[in-house]
Image (cartoon, rainbow, N blue to C red):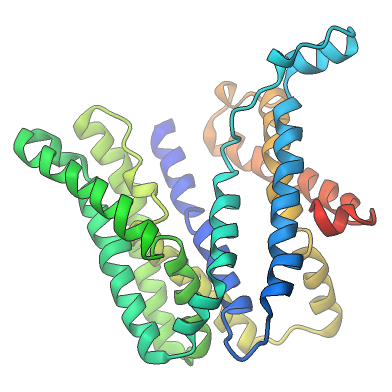
Length: 319
């Protein structure tokens, strides 16, 4: 039961990373909004690199052995944990995305090119990889070998070298911001999002049980079910704000809060580690432990980010 509850909770938030990239597409994908290479590298990319390097060091030193070594004046470089923190993959992806921004804007400048790019993305970024990730191929040794070769081909060649993968969400986000969203489109998005959520929540424990292994293929950000959830959330939020205008006061509050998001992302794993020590999830049902830990982690991370934003230079290069 705990695994099923955890699967449902995980399925509910799978859209998060794709939606962030889609929002980046809205903000940075407009070809009519001028941005020079100099500004792109000196402002955006430089900030990503300096923040990544700083927090990479912080996370490397944030372990019990290192802290105790400093306190006891017994420093040992072996106590520095150089393993990459689980969430830093996003930094590599977003830096690459910004480097490719001029080329992605060539795509977003043409509706025809956007349609073509999205069509290729659906096939090569979402559909084929998801089919190849299904564990059922393992029952046939011959098919398993072919599938493994195809996986290496698509992931090693198409997705990385042709700029598909996560960059698909960038183009999809900008495209969805240019088309009208009426009730009909909203209903379609809601339907696909619900189907995507149910597919993720049901198939994960079902296939895990059938194969007697923990299957996480349905959680993949590049799966059709997660893409459906992301599109649904994006469309619903856009429809809501277009039909319920925000007051100037609330708009200012939202703008301030949004400026803390990058800092929240950077620090939240550190906070999460502390929270899981204070609130041991193994001693509680995930129905209660997960929401409590998530809410507390968000609140603490938000305030840390807000404080860091008050410090000159730090707010420009570190968060």
